[in-house]
Length: 391
Image: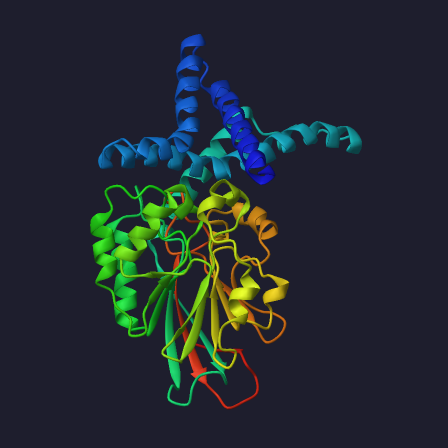
């Protein structure tokens, strides 16, 4: 809750600061200030209003509304810190001149320049970021383990995370994800949360596309925070209709080959939905599985519970998006226990955190390319339970 409040305060201040900066160069009197203020107020409130509007508006109207609000948000992410840096620089230069007792007027930056440079840099970042968000990459991870049964030398798992199907992420990105999965022919497909972006109206055909994608040992999904926003009963039904087995605080053994356990999202805002969430302790669920088989733990958040170490072999997570838009990753690095990629843990366990396959909010990614993760598990007689190898 405190993190959410902090984000709201920063976002509000960023919009106010941007209004003051832009009004200082668009100086045509009260009328221009009023119009600029109303436009920025509309754009400021748009991301907040989108979930409410999604329940009633037409599909096309919701998309236009979403693009307006989220692209403005994406613009602010680099623009706000850049303008602050320019203002701090302009503030510091006169004091530096006094300290050095030198005339350094040539180093001063005009007010217009301190706004226009961040403005065009932000436009450039967003232009490239829109392209990067479409550049879906296949990340490959090869692990070796002594926990596969004698009749299986290799198991292939495809991980989708944070696709955020909804008003903005639609058929184009879903088709790219499906194309990769069909090309790779995995034995198992897992979704580690936020497959859908809240409200699932107008999404039946997307579920039908997912239903056609098959895997020999099954498809498994867990809930993320955005499944909660859309109503857990509606979103889990969407996942089931798309062919996924939804694991909500439970574990399964697939054909005596591998264990998969899945947990509901338990982030800070989850308490609002506590009556609809599974509350059974994670380590209890894991302890009931066959410990001689390799165990995958699906968990949207990338936090690792100490009590669970030694009870799973690989945790697959998402949620972080690796910040999605630089410089947001400078903040998310500190917010999450594990931010991105593969990390070895204690007790012969490991975690892999996906950057995500889609986008949350703005259809922009900058220095955080989207991914579908392909994981190969190779059988080995060695004692080492899990180790990373070049793909």
